[in-house]
Length: 543
Image 1: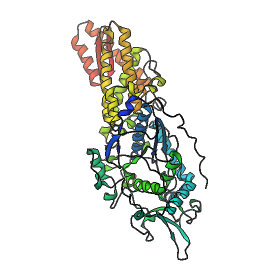
Image 2 (image 1 turned 30 degrees about the vertical axis):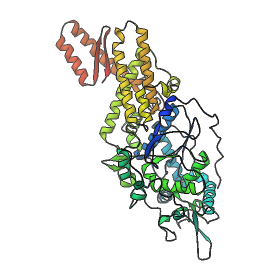
Image 3 (image 1 turned 60 degrees about the horizontal axis):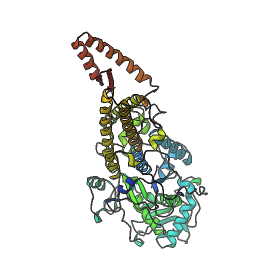
Image 4 (image 1 turned 180 degrees about the vertical axis):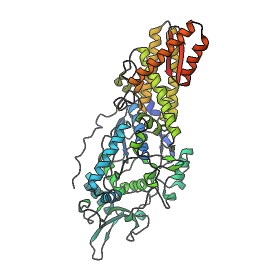
């Protein structure tokens, strides 16, 4: 029962060179039900805690949507110049883990580690930056026990005892003693700010909309007749007879293991100390998990998060995508049919608070987006004779990005608007490329193309989608976007085939056989190849 080593404080630099654009950032807060200006608790620094996976089985698309959503939030803070401490936990002990391990003939910790690695691999493949800290629940038992002691001492929890007065291992939070309970999710007390929150309020669980929640089955420990109030929830729970001996910890209030909610209170406090800027997670965690977490953290005498953010669900035909409901898609299965870049783009294609309907059309639109992005980056790189380095792209401040992109990202991370800004810049860049050969001031013209290329790649990078960044380059997703000098066998083969057709078309035009020339152009167009004629000959690109 040992804790991990106390982490080094990485936020020692004080205020950083935060972009002027940071002053315009506005974010939604679940507790206030409003979009409001963001002001960091510590100048130049942002602390974020996001609930990670319960590693019972393989990751599915719904899990990864939340990870991608908060990765984009983090990347925007970094582009604004903030020093970000990002904590994402791993729940590695849980009823489902214990039960599924027993059914599979595994040790519970063995199963947890196998699937923790699968989640890590999925995050990596989809370009999710590794967290600053990724604590496991089992490494923080002392933290949890100490926190429960504080809650008991403050009069907000009670120990269940047997007939002889001995502690049973069950400890419950006393909701009636905490008048603030429900402040995070009591939907009837606040005004709804927009259409997205209307949908999430209707579909997401809350104090007013708990009922029979098929997305969050009631913890068996919370159904105990020993509770003083039906709303009370387990902070610590006695082991089931079937629980392994190594899944039990000795405490002053009896042998057992932690309730689900106490884990995040303990770990967020350990790594981010008192009040931190943002607590994030999926919509299904809003109630009861985050409501209970907020209550127990504050009842222990600590400040909770200053702002709570929740990403909406991935849906299939309007229903939440979930393995428990039989409609979940595993990440490996999706990646077997689509490139990781395309899957990430699809997962991040709408604002984080909006439901994301997953369909063949969603993926087809993402593939089309990739083709347009890769085509421009390749052509622009060839035109200027190089691709800007990753170091240059990463160094671009938010203040140097196009105003429409910044405005969209500052509007509660509106990635739909941000993507529109990217494709506006690509269209402008393509116009510059089409006129490049006709410009007498070719050096100036190339500089304009290069500036457009840098802007597009920096905006894409903010969304985790620069095709020339990792993991896309190593995994082969960069494709033709690698530009000048790219080692792309597929692109080279296509270029050779199309160039032969263009040469034949040029001969036909020279012989004034315009019917033949037009037929070649139309055939290439039908295959998705756009032809541009210029004084120096014809060039091609993917539509």
